[in-house]
Length: 559
Image (cartoon, rainbow, N blue to C red; front, side, top):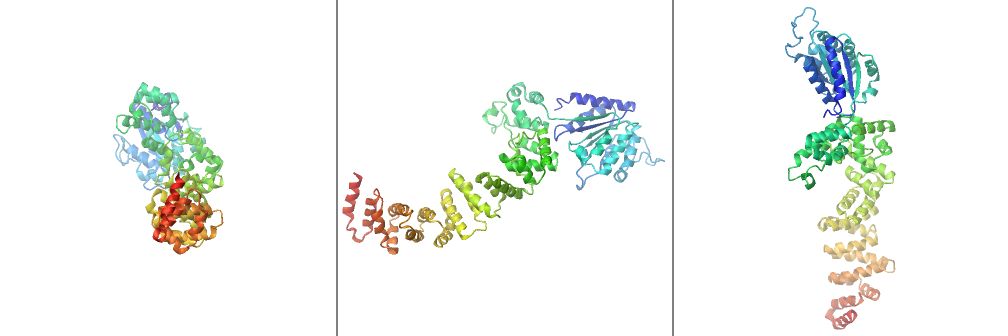
C-alpha cells in the first residue's frame, strides 16, 4: 500500500540516517483520514530500527477520555520496554543515580512534560531515538509545550521526531506549527489518496493483471484512492469470488460489488476525520439526493465556510465525489450507527427543511417516518399526500405507514375522518384483516359528518365485504338523503345496482329503512343495469309474481 510513497520514504530515511551524526530533525505528516499516514510511520520505524535507533511511539487521545494516558507517560512506557532497560531508569544507569538525570518514572512524565522531554533528550546523547507521535491534533497545551521542548533539543540531541496530524491541526494549533518552522531539518509531508494509476498497481499486485485491467476503474471509483477502503474492497472480492453468495459476474472474476465490509472501512475513515466531518457526512447520508450546501448548513446549523471545508476534506480523503458518497453502502452504515444519537431529531428537521424547500411529499414523508414523530400540523397534510402518491405507485406498505403515523397526530374530528377513511381504503388493499378495528370509529365519524360522501361510497364495499351490512345501509341512506339530486346520485345508483346483485340481503334492509328508495333508484338506474335491477327487485318481492316476466325482459335485453 506504499505505492507513490517511495520518494517521501527516501527523504525521511535520509533524515533518520543523519541522526547518528548528531543532526536531529522533525517531520510533520498530514493529510486526510486513512490515507496511510500511520502506515508510513511503521515503515519509518522499521528503517530506524535497522539503523540502530530506538523507536518511541505515542498516540494523542481525545481530551477527557477515560483511561487515557498522557503523551509523555506513553513515551516513558515505550522507553522502559526497550531491551536492557529496568523500570524507571534508562539503559545502563542505576536506579539511584546521584543526579537523577535519567530517571523517568511514569508520575514524572505525567506531572511535568517539560522535565520528561529534557530527560528523553539527555538519553538521546547515549542512544539515538526515533520519536513518533500520532494524532497530534488531539494534544493538550501541556503536551504541546513538551513536544516543542523536545523539538528544540533536536538541534543538539540525536532525535528524529515524526509528528502525525490531521489537516485541521493547522487551524487548531497555528502557533505550534509556526514554531515548528524554526526546527532543524524540518520537513512537512502531506499524503493524498492514491492516484488511478497507483490503484491499478495495487489491484494488479493483489488480484492479478487481468482483474486490474477489467476492474481497476471501479476500484478507484468506489475507494477514491483511499488506501483503507481500497484494501477492504480487495479483501471483499477475494473472500467472495469462490462462494455461492457471489454473483455470477463476480464469480467470473473481477466485477466489483462493494459490500458492507468496505462500507465499514469508509465509516472508519469518517470517524478518523473528526466529529465535525462526521457530522457533515451524517447530514449527507440523511438528506440523500437532496443534499446541497444550503440544506446542509441549515440542517447542521453551521456556516457555509465550515461545511465547505469539511466537504473538501472528505472529498480529499476519497470518501465523497461532490455531494454523494463514492461507496453506495456508506449512507446506510452512517444512518444505522448506534452512536448517531440525534438521528430522529435531524430526520424531523430535514423533513421541515425539505417541505419548505418544495420537495415532494414522498421525500418529506420518508423523513417523518424515520423520525417517527408527528408533532406539527403540517406533517399530517404531507403524510396524507404522500400516502396517495405511494398508493398511486402500488406501494401500499409505505402508504399505510404514512397514514398510521398521521393517526397519531393531534387531529380535529374532520381531519381524523379523512385519515381513518383513507387508512381503511389503503389497509384493505394490503391486508383486509388488519383494518376491522377501525370500523366502529369510521362509522361514528361518518355519522357525525366527518367523512366525505364520496369517500363513504368507496368504504361501503369494504364494510359489506366484512359483513357489516347494517352499518353500510345506515351510511348509504345518510349519503342518499343528501345526494339524491346531487353530483353523487349516479355513483349511488351504480353502487346499489352492483350491491343488490352481490349482497341480496342488502335490498331487504334498505326497504325496511326506506321503502321508497328502491323505486326511485329503479326509475333512474342506468340503461345497462335496469333489467338486472328489476330482476333483483322481483326476486325479493313476496311470491316472486313478476319473476317470469322480468326474466324474459333480461333475456331480451341481452339479445
